[in-house]
Length: 487
Image (cartoon, rainbow, N blue to C red):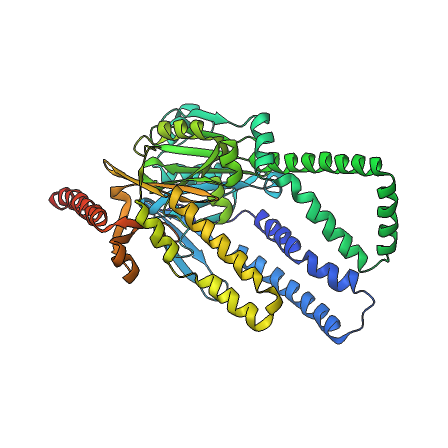
């Protein structure tokens, strides 16, 4: 069954114009404000090229809106794209892995939203993107995707769209946001901002002498310096809390029998939904600050092509206490159990890691010897850091093969735990260098479908254990493939 061919909402032009303004404002200020009195040839030509580029972009924006169309044909989306080179894509519903929705400030002005459907292929640009949609149109597309015929405003039918009643497991509180603002160190953002403003003003005004005089005055009146420092910290904490609230406010994690739903944001909102069956792996990340505070970030690895911001949205609240995050994961995805007690490497692996050539240290030493001999001591610092990093990597690396899952933990100053199911692993490979053969160890690589391809490395496992890993995976895959062939 074919639906009518549709264009994006006309507000798409306004969204693109806003993006154009945001991307070109810095160049405009430089050419027409800061260099307003300049008659230099390259400035004059730069102005002409800038205006020509803006005019051309405006024409392309209008043509894109007019020529880009989409429709639903049977169980597929058909997208017609291209201004000068025409392209038509057909994306089957069963290729959709998850969907991501974002509503920016400008979307809200027009009562609109956006929708991205991530496909099960790792080809760049394979996602289906609807940059501007009405809320009703978005629901219509999702209802077609989920093979539900929803009636707008019908609550029971809306529940059917999501495979049942959703249960909320987490909502961010003010306490969570305050903790997140300190953990993310966003409150320190004001200091580089003030530094940038100072140096930019120094280029146009003679403020260095004034600043030095003011600093000398503050040194004599030290109590004023303390007050100003406290005031700056209060302002920076307030700004950091505001930034965190805008990004992580109203953070909500919920699920039903089939999917996991994540939404966040104040003002500009984002939402993410993924089928539990489409989760390829779990990654638990802990920075040094998070480890000190007992926090963790759990990310869901899926196949679809995601931008950085979308990857952040696919993370369970990244500032959640570690034990709460583990309990939440156990509730949402019980097939991915996390174990704290894992297998450690024997001491010979530490000696191997310490004997691996220090290539970066050698390059740094040679470079300093040639160009800056008086800084040659810095190579020693690089060597010491490399040494400490390898020791920490040994002590914080462990692994576990339990039932149908593989769990790998690596780290040092930061810590990452990777958990995947055997039927989500695409390939297992074993490699061993000349030095590894001397120590009787090898490196295991696990490949999971993602975009880009997610490769996990376990460096230092014994040759016997590596062989067991390989045979375990091969046996599991054979049992998995055999029923598929029979069916």
